[in-house]
Image (cartoon, rainbow, N blue to C red):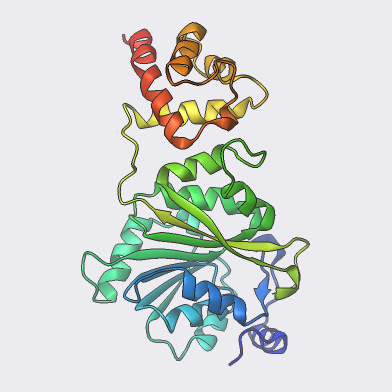
Length: 298
């Protein structure tokens, strides 16, 4: 079954009595080379367990099933469940769960999926997804913060979002989400996808990015929540200098101490947060944490 053929997609959906759901950001791939390339590039170990988010009619799922030991797909649209039962019937290494990925207990869910696949405790787990544009960042943050030691996260996103996620310090696209991801791993763009590769065609082009997660973050932090507070504070007021932005986020931190820390790092005390790398944010937070903690002790 050619799951990238528009006629086939419409036929299986018609048999199930369902239509494209705009509220779920459904745009199905009709260029067969795209799911093939994504599946080939999303993980390094064929023994991996792949968590797929939003399988749609199963075009990417089928390619993943042919390359990896087990695929656990989570689909929010209940109407697509019978469609997937038909399109993926030949693959006995695929399970499909009808749920919202934002509500799934991922550690428990993936542990159970690993046991069903008779994989050992060292099974590598990777994520592969065509993410709805409207919820890209919340899903990424959910994956990064859930506690599952993913090896890689490969997602299709809006092209402009891909530019933000892969931006370097000092560039206009560099923002809080870029730096946050930089704490968890390294990110790179794999390739672009034109809007013509989808049915129905979206109004924007897309791109595929891959995040390779660190087994252990390379940054030694005094306090992880404080580090993220400093990072988010730096970007909440992008037009302010970093000294003023951090002071606004943490009023108990004297501006002169923030400026002194920046100077000790050989950075201009009037620098803006968008120019700091993740490693520099880590160093800065470690410099400022003892001062902030001391002023907030009870």
